Length: 178
Image 1: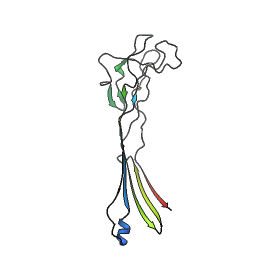
Image 2 (image 1 turned 30 degrees about the horizontal axis):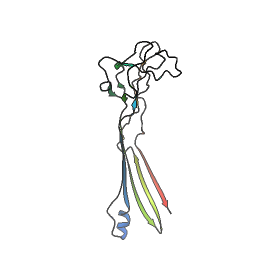
Image 3 (image 1 turned 135 degrees about the vertical axis):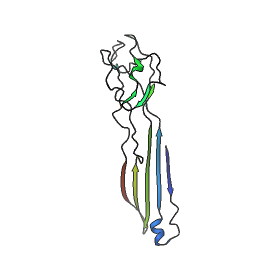
Image 4 (image 1 turned 60 degrees about the horizontal axis):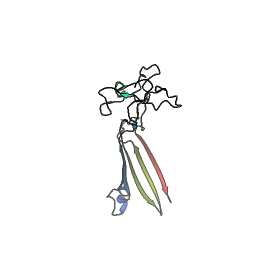
């Protein structure tokens, strides 16, 4: 994350023009993060351990697959469901916890504001733009569970149906500082 505020250098020498041109600042907040780790799960008590929460039971890697080649990267199919198979009945799978990563996050917010002295007080006009570049930041996939109790794959379990941030938003504000 990067956060910076910069006082624009014009309008420093007094007069009416300086009063209009001066007092402007620009602020930027840039947030860049790698994807959130997640674990594909079986989704029911496949290990037959009668645990109260069967969701943590993990599958096995299918032959030839691992964390490096399981991610496809398309929101309609973030990872390859065929990279996972059910382990032998009554056993736990070999897929480690948090073995896959969701989409990364890239977001830049911009603010432009002007401070104007009014007597001994200050009036501040602000323009704030959140998600400046209107980048879609996807959340993790739809469901961690991959398999139905009959052993078939859950359709669309690898799809992403939510975003992790909002679309571009612009707001204006007027603040009186006393």
